[in-house]
Each structure stands twice: as C-alpha cells, then as structure tokens.
Length: 400
Image (cartoon, rainbow, N blue to C red; front, side):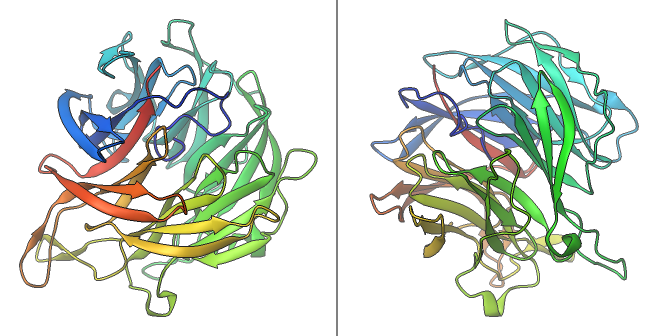
C-alpha cells in the first residue's frame, strides 16, 4: 500500500479513515480478516484462491476494487502462469468478488500500484526488469495494455513502482543485486519517469556512487513535505531524498541512517524491507528481516534481527531518528501495514522456521498498538499455516 502493502496511498484525497479489512496471502490463497483497531485484534473470515502464488496487491483509490498480482515462478515458460486479477470489495465486509477474467502477463509481477487518478494500474517485473501499464475500466476491470512510445530505462531487478501525489511523476525502484558466488554487484537505482495518461518517459536515474553499494527495495512519500524515504535492502539503511522543484529527486540523499538496533553485528542473512510513513507524517516504520537459512532441507532461524524500526521524523528538515526496534516475535517480516486509523500495526512474519532448540516458530501476523509517540506495543500474534506457501504479502485496505 503502499505501499507495501495495500493501504490507500498517503497522497490520495483525504477521506474518513473508517474501518479496514486485512488480506493475507500464503501461496495462492488470499485470506480475509476483520480488523478491530480498538481491541487490537483480528478475526479470520474466508479465503479465495488465485491461479498461482500471490506476489502483491494494491487497492483502487476509490476503495472499491483490489488488484492482485500472482505468478507461477520466475521460470514459468509463458504468460499463462503470470497475471493480475481484479476484485470488487464489498463495502461492509471486505469480501472479494472477481471482476472478469485474470489478465495474463509475460513475466513474474513482483509489485503493482494504481495511479493517483485511478485510471491505470502499473505492474513491475524483476526479471527481466521492467514495468507495464494497463488501463482500468470504469467498472474496475483491467483494460488494455498502454503502448509505451519511449524506450524506458528500467535498470536491474525492479522491485517497486510508486506514483507521486501530483500524478505526474512515477518512480521505479530498481534494487540491483548484491555480489554473490563470484558474480559482481549489479548496481541499483531509482528510475524517475514523467507520467501522463499511462505513458512513461525517462526523466532521471538516481544512483549514488554509480549505484554501487546501493540496493533500494521500497520507498514511501511524506504526506505533506517534499521528502522521499528509501529502504536499502542489503545495506540495512534508510535514506531521505529531497524532491526537486521540477518534480524529480535530488541526486544524493540528505540523510542516511542505520535501520538495525545493532548494525555492528549484522547477521549474514540480514536485510531491510518495506517502509511506510505514518499518515500524520511524524513517524516512519521500516522492516528488518533476517532470512531463514537451510539446514538439511529445513528452514532454520538465521539469528538476525526481525523487527519494525520506528523513526521520529524531524518536521523541520525530514531527518529520521531511530527511536525503537520492535521485535516482531517471528521470522522475516516481509510486509506490514497500519490500519486506516493508524491505531494498530500488523507485521507479517513470512516464514516458519526451526530454532536451535528444535522449536518450531510458525509464520504469523503480529499485532501492535501504535502509541501517540509513534512507538509500538506488542499485543498478540496469530499463527498462519504456510504449508502451501510462505506468507508472502499482507495488507490492510480501508473500506469505502
């Protein structure tokens, strides 16, 4: 949802936050939960199945529709195993009703977003790195593919796309790849495009130090100030970039911060994850993920930090200060979400693992209360069955 999750973007027109519904994806199954922000609790309702493993989802700004990207894997031979499905959201319960047939895609979609006007959906592919744009019909159905008249610079390993509040700028986050097994590093970048009526045009490539040691994963916008916050995956950093007067980004960050509570003792499988700015603009949340390691065919706790980093944002200049590292009580929080009222935060611990004492830690949804000072208080967690696939995505969508 933003952002990482399927929350209405902070740049959307102001609306009553109202009630939200949580959707959690394990493999190809998307499960609906009622959200009780007052009681900081979830109630599991029903599930639907998509044609293949769910990758990401994003709501329409009207809150009436949800778009879900799915894939049979990066090695799938043709478009029949990748696609996007459209659903109508019941305004009272959040139950999902399919709209038309899924739209096939040529490659694995790793992220998608709906533009500010609600007229197009932008879909991101990691391999080959790219982005496509589809029109959205007035009934919420996915329409025709928009032809791109310009050759687009889509970098290496695109991971996210966001449309800025004006609706005139889109930013493609291209992560690159860390060096591994003798393979050199693939530089990362933030690819800035002009955007109008579904058409993208190269604007700028933001790549400090030529993109070396720069692996951006996700970004989010401040709701009122010209600051863009970027999560660096392998580096476990948070960076802040200024928006320029022409709508682009500054070439260099104005702040770089460590996301870990103990960056000196960073685990081998440690990465930063998704990022979300609090709707009031005073706080920011970033996931720290410690991936499971393989031990005789079983996922084992890698021993790193699994937390939500909480930052206070200086209203004068956008400088973030780490004020808390809230443990998620699970392994690899890939996605998390604030409810529409921002009273609770739910983190999705992606992977079930075995600890060194042979204790199983299941995948889970961890629920926190959000305090007035932005800090998180753990309340409870709900185990999630991942026998058919990991808890790859979770989001909270405001109901109409």
